[in-house]
Image 1 (cartoon, chains in turn cyan, brown):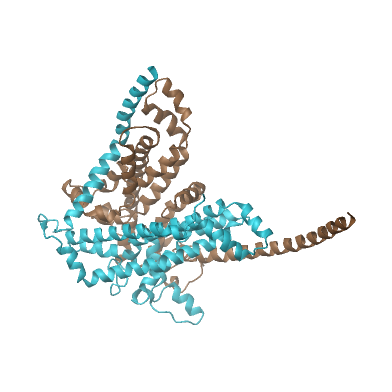
Image 2 (cartoon, rainbow over the protein chains, first blue to last red):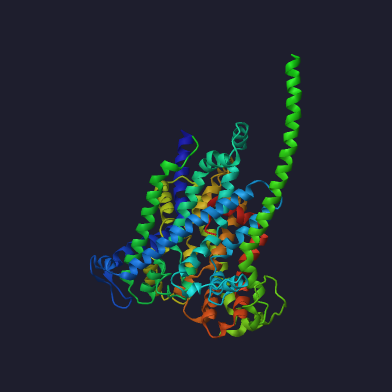
Length: 300
Length: 300
């Protein structure tokens, strides 16, 4: 009886305390997340230039997208970027994680060095460096010239500009590599010993043990890297000097959104673009979660 | 009986032979792996090393120098670049340091408060709010961007650091809350039960028990919070408009686009300096950075 009273008094006190602890976060949630989320949905149905109050135009913004060539171009650029960068990055990450996994001496040092591009790669400094490496008279072409090859002017050629950003993304293989490495270390050693006794070679062990056991980690990396790639902004902005050029070849969806909002002050249209981006991210995540039961293995 | 004994002796001899062969093969394998890793590390770090090397070279030698080791070590680019722009880089570093300091402390404190409530207290609405928190992880910043901008504009906060730090003070990046909840949950309940019996308030339990036991996760959160804030480009690009308020990445971008920034050596010198804080954090807290990245597959 007494315990019950104590318990209920404690629960009462805990509730007050909990909401006290949550107060800052709740304030942020309402004022900076949920409120703006609703407001942005509303704005996506309006014409709004920041100066005059928003004017309701119904579905006009969404209808406008259908005939907006830059919208389709931006979608295509972002999807090309995701489709090229994410698988290549994950392949590089997995390959290097396999190399690092057998507790070599110096493995900690190698791991740190290989992680470095990933740690620094998101900075403006590296994006500026990239611009200079792939410029017509940049580092890459000077290295190629040493082998007697004349390189293109990568950054200013619409055929290659996006590829330089893909290379930049793949170069940052370090963080999925670390995740793969942690996953590889979770695989029980006796599985490999048993397979070795059965005469399974290295390749067969990789196919039959490593890969299936690693599917949850691959799944995690795939989702995470896809979302990050769709949200990428800084590299494209800095490398193309804010234009998304040459001829919109690096016009990431986020960059187009930024231009519409903060260069042309089409805030209503930009809000609609933001909702399209969120639907794409949500949709892709949902599809990947639904598809995981066909290829992701979970223990028990 | 003796047949079996013979067999075993023969087997032993064959086994010893194959072990020696396997051992030799194993050592060759290891050597190859080391060679491969050294080459890959060198290739991955080459662009960064080239940038650092170029920052020490006179202007006319930079583009033709492809070696990652400079021939001369002049600091001229550093001293000239630091003051080449309208505003000295001292100002930009002070701005960045201020933003980072408030963001790190605010973010860690606010996130730990919310995480404590979610992980250690029972209260009605916990499941719902926790679900909402996880959901905000999926919302891309672009969706809330425009209404937030309108809000901050109405508060007259544009071109100040407030739009950058206030969300941190409210723990708006749910990622850090999630990180801490995971850790707080692993602390055994018995530890706080005794304190509870003595009538300890939740606040005292948070301060006296949970916080001191959670230094690893608090340090990890602080480190990543610092890295994200230091590198942040998108937020400052939108909210900071006058040069003297720029943070370092924004200043670097402006420097690159200005006439003064046409000096490649000075640009690389400033770029090298700009990544130093993150690099040094990595060097001194390598274990925490790597384990943080492994545990949650952080963005870098």
